[in-house]
Amino acid sequence: MSIASRLRDLRLDAELKGHELAARCGWHKSKVSRIENARTAPSDADIRLWCEGCEAEDEAADIIAAARTADSMYLQWRRLQRTGLRKLQESRVPLYERTRLFRGYASHVVPGLFQTSSYATALLSAISRFHRTPDDTSKAVAARLARAGVLHKAGHRFTFVLEESVLRYRMGDAETMVGQLHHLLSVLSWPAVSLGIIPVSAPRPAMWTLEGFNVFDDQRVHVELLSAQVTLTAPGEVALYVKAFTELRRSAVYGPEARDLIHTAITKLKSDRSRATT
Image (cartoon, rainbow, N blue to C red):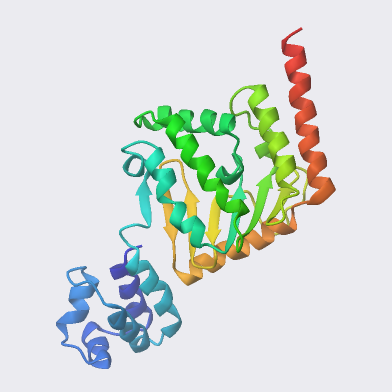
């Protein structure tokens, strides 16, 4: 929903006519119409006054945040990847380096920070083919692995939740997957990382499988869709994803139980590989 539409709905919910809201805000009566018809972009102060006039002060922070990021909330991958994948990987480094608490949920593939070179190569080359972007896979993989260095820098904490199915989705050949899963086993012992896995059999009393998302401190959320990256900064929306992450964490297992799930997936891969060669 556009900012103009959200503000108009607040006025209608308050049962105010345009000139009545303008009077409450101390504006010329035409200003309300100009804002609602997107002819005038409201300032932060305008939004606060509007919400106060509609007795909806608690909506102001979310609308202001949405207004500030309106041009960057929904970015199609073809726009982000138009010059290849390397620059996209490098562009995210400053955000990762200034984030103190990183929370990530993965429902399809291993999180980028934990990917091995072979796994990242298989994934990024598939993305490049699908979106028909310039093929700079080797440089993009190098940039992704370099970005993962933040995992070992002081002052950062990382909490991840993976669906067990992530361990089963084949990315690359069996050797690539076995190597990736062994790497996840080592990640389990890293001091700055908490890695939980939601078993397929886990009951889900309060949360269901979602698109993968990352939460950067309590300020920003990235949600990855097939067609685009969605960036959320409105406090209410960020809080909703933090709540979802908390619920998903409760369904995950950690430590020895998580290690057992990874070992089981490795055993299955090796068994499948042995049958394929006999």
